Image 1 (cartoon, rainbow, N blue to C red):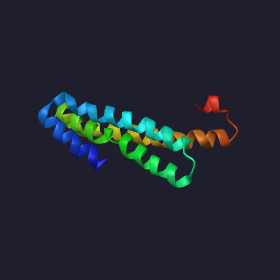
Image 2 (cartoon, helix red, strand yellow):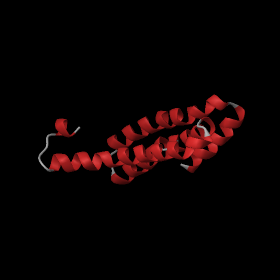
Image 3 (cartoon, rainbow, N blue to C red):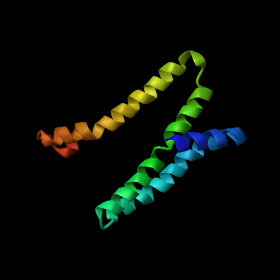
Length: 112
C-alpha cells in the first residue's frame, strides 16, 4: 500500500534493516484484525475489520520493492520485479483455482 511504501522509505533513511520491520508490523496488526473480523457479530463490523486486515497485510509490497530495488543489480532488476509480480498473481489466483477444483468434484485435500 502507499502507506507501507512511505513508511518504508522513511525507515530506510535511518536504518537499512528497519525496512523489513514494516511487513512484520503489518502481520502483527493483520492477524488480530482478521480474527476480530471473523468473530464479529455484524456485516459492517466485519467489513471494517477486513479493511484494517487488508491495509495492514499489504504493507509488505512497498518494503519488498524497496529492498529489491536496492539489493538487486540493475541488469536483472526488471526480471526480479516481474518474478515478484508473477508470484503475487499466482498467489492471488490460488483460492479461485482451489474453489473451482473443489466445486468440480475434486476433494479439498487433493486440490490443496
